[in-house]
Image 1 (tube, rainbow, N blue to C red):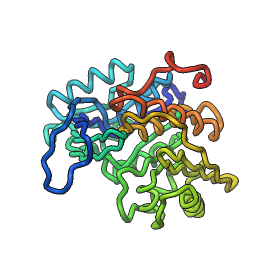
Image 2 (tube, rainbow, N blue to C red):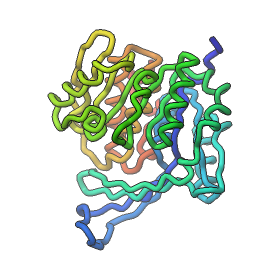
Image 3 (cartoon, rainbow, N blue to C red):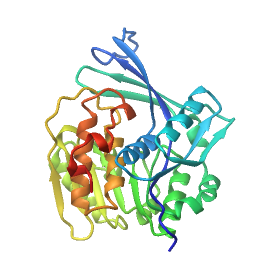
Image 4 (cartoon, one colour):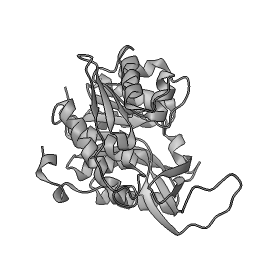
Length: 312
């Protein structure tokens, strides 16, 4: 086995988040005034990588950017986080990904994304990064990249004995069941769990049933996590069939944007350092800290500003 010189490699996207703070979500065809507007760097791929890096992981990132102002900004951001960008490349075929996000006073959000350059990331790009990937302990990816690209990444990771984390977001119908064989840990929210299992997931009890459905399928050697927002999350353990509910922490929610990515990124950081139950507990705690502040990456605290329980 090659030396594992990196903790986490993220295969994903960089997205510039355009946040509009509104009193309520607009109705169909309604034009309304936003109380405030801010630009934040985001994207699931970058978010999870930066969250893990701020917790102390040595990370690498594989993504595609457009030749534009946002793309150039992201290079500076990733470098400032000390993330390896040897396989962050540019394309002339599409702009850097952009998201329009509306946030209400309760911290709820509604998001529309144009993935742009992200969809130009392909299997050849992943193959070019093989020498890097095989030096990592954990690979995390999601459906923000093309399905074939995500699947190829997972296969390559298992070839080199990495732990694989798959965030099934955004959810699509008829996901290739080939994914199951190469995913160690599946992470889904209520909507994604419903698409993945075909059953409603709106409560802790329904999330527990969804876990049972996933555990009965091939693959998922570690198991599945269903995140439930303020209700916490549910973990299904493939090894022993155990299903555990982690209640949500009582906090004042300012902006929930990027909290799921913070959970996935911190989970990817902790999963190689402690048992899965403690990893989920710590990831849940980390995500609960992020919803108390505005923005995505801007809300992710660094390890130096956290209590000793996070330093494992």
